[in-house]
Image (cartoon, rainbow, N blue to C red):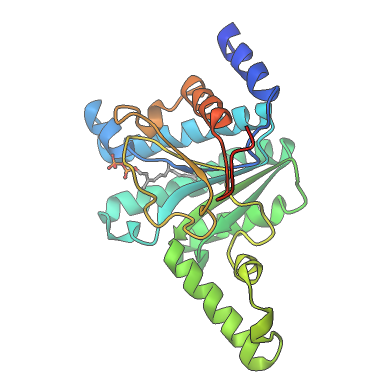
Length: 253
Ligand code: FPP
């Protein structure tokens, strides 16, 4: 469906200013959305996947290069089995249904997190998606799956320690870049903007190292992820473009 004129105007305005290179999104509120509409929680996740597809199209339209979404945290295993199974199934369905489109759009899929422990069907789908989009460079979609930020830092520390003990690295060479290079996001820019839907003001173990200087944008509490349409997303980007990013220095404005 063609965008209405106000969406087109917003897109043009956004493109006339520096656009964030990397946005990271905590897609929160699927359960609350489902409850509000009289559905079981898993229906909220299904609607959530549709919003993700819509969001990727908008990101490409405005020139955002990296999109990282929090799909499943290391803590989410403690949810009811039925909900975990649905989330694992949605990953397979999303990849099966969208992989041709994703390839056509030049998007590269990567996973942040240890996906080796996912159910076999989900793991196979993820491996397929990673392998079949590896050459793409137009849009990078990172899906955080079985992801926890502290666990990611522990993994990096262990890998670095291993390299020091084998002599591959010397202690004096270890700096911030060494740590970045051992995170799942190695080689990617840090997120410029972290968006969280549904009002909660926390990062929930999402990209703690990478988001040290990210701007944070939280939607009003009644905007759940399945409600996160183009207009509110573009509004978030416009708000970001008004921010004065100082990185600990002084204002350049
Ligand atoms: C948070 O809402 C959402 C999640 C834990 C899962 C998000 C996952 C998807 C949208 C599907 C991802 C699929 C692909 C293919 C990447 P919540 O359940 O915590 O909501 P609540 O806070 O209202 O309970």
